[in-house]
Length: 206
Image 1 (tube, helix red, strand yellow):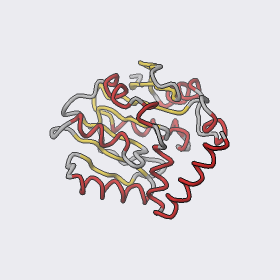
Image 2: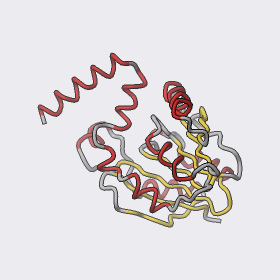
Image 3: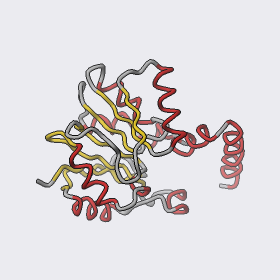
Image 4: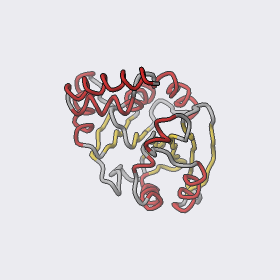
């Protein structure tokens, strides 16, 4: 553990010297996220199809954004939403540099992701839920953005591992279910493939 902390400290210093956006991307993605996050399996379970309109709320450095953009193809669209100026600027720059034209970056507001009404087939949020204030109100407002049959998928850190326990970046599963129920949703899937996260999928209850 001591060697790991020392290594993390060195990496953190190096990233800070590189600038804010590099540091923030490391915080979002870490060393081994592909291994534990299982992004391809997550996207497959969600049944994301070509042509889908998907929102990545709390997109950060675009970990899921660019993977989703590849899946939805030229006829689909991914709305990458974040409230952080650095991340919004980075996402726009990366999409332009990579020539990815089916990503629309949105500078959201803390109370509203500013998505187009009635068009979103899937909202995905990963390790963002605990940052949202007045969560039931936020997701109740988001109901207007969903297309018929639209869903909300929440990947949120549980208490597995020292980092979330130490820094409180977790939300208990039952809390998520209760808050989403209050917002007007019902739980339709509860997947257990990602050990570090609750993985819950909701649809509007009416």
